[in-house]
Length: 558
Image 1 (cartoon, rainbow, N blue to C red):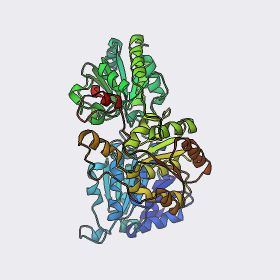
Image 2: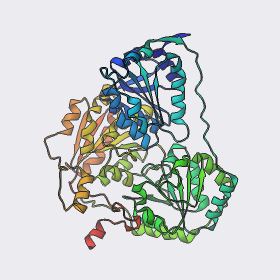
Image 3: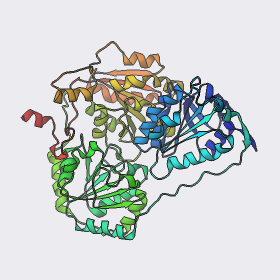
Image 4: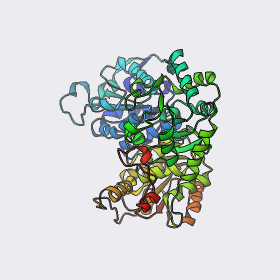
């Protein structure tokens, strides 16, 4: 059948099972928006307040559902406003297709109005990028973009379409979405070596990363931990891939990881990394990281093997498939003494905070209790992000969404909107500091426009908390540009953007506020006022070995 380019875009989205797109229209992409209007009963479009919000929403949708998220923007500034969201998705391996429209083909390269080489701009932060200049190539390009976004190690793909292509007509032939088969390229010999290392170990430790969430290996990881009889720690991105209430679980590893995890990994004789990339925030000083242990690395991306940490054995492939094979062949191990040692570390070094006052850890523990641990939590970046990772028990995958690799302030609200759209039956709560919330708080207008029942919790300490913490500990308390004590009233802002608002100043107000926000079934802001000098502990100084982890008690002893 004969269709124009814009209709082909919509038909290809339908082929791929896309039910929602997030975006913002403009001149160059008007034809596509006209086609979306005609198909509004089949594809829902969420108009965000800013293109960056659209990218973060598509990202949150993808992380919460496991599907490919889709965002759209017009040429020039519309396209460049997607860049931070695309980079965020790239760093955290989130499947996304960003569709932009550019000026007409004759106007390319002439510094035309709102012309930007967005494919060139985003080349380092996408798995692939396309500029479609021929309508006959449009359908195949879009299909390929979705295949690339979700295959192997997922990531964002950009498709830039010139405006004349969106209007041109050609023959369109429907095609079903291609099934992506997860790869597994490890050999039997490699599997046997890994099994041998596990059998020889006396103090094994499992280190989980975001790949365990992406691959859907929740059940396989749990079985592997039992077979290996090993404790389990996770990264920020690995939250929920292992039951956070399990006796085997030791908490997060790294700069703000628990003492049990950091000291345990430093004492182990075998470290098994599952879908993790040995980030600098995890390893600290790489020369001192698990230096007495053999290291096994299982990952889908060959580029990650031996990139940051040299390993003794590796298995390449989709983690779920690799663990299925490994679990079938691995005899059950017994490390009772080691598990007792780890239990002792957990008992000796629990996470703790001053419970005499309102604090973010208390807020997170209360949210955990009120929601029964069943909420989907998104965060921005900073102290509140670490507290949200530490003090909420994540028992299921895809329930903690945060910008781990890029550390994008302003990520959480858009991501929470996308997550709630993708998982409408979930209670979706975004945790943000006041510094982060300022960056994209206009997306509350998006939530109110569509009555998306997110709960926006603002942890307001009137400072840029994490930066201030570093200034306190390492910069002689020189608080350069980190104090936010101004006249901004977040509750009035929320109400002005069409949302409900609740201010919390005392501990006993937290649970009723969260319960009330959930009962409203509407977008609600809950502002929690906490002291400006609360700190995230434990902590490892940048570049130090993770065994040098310290907390507030250690500082008081000095």
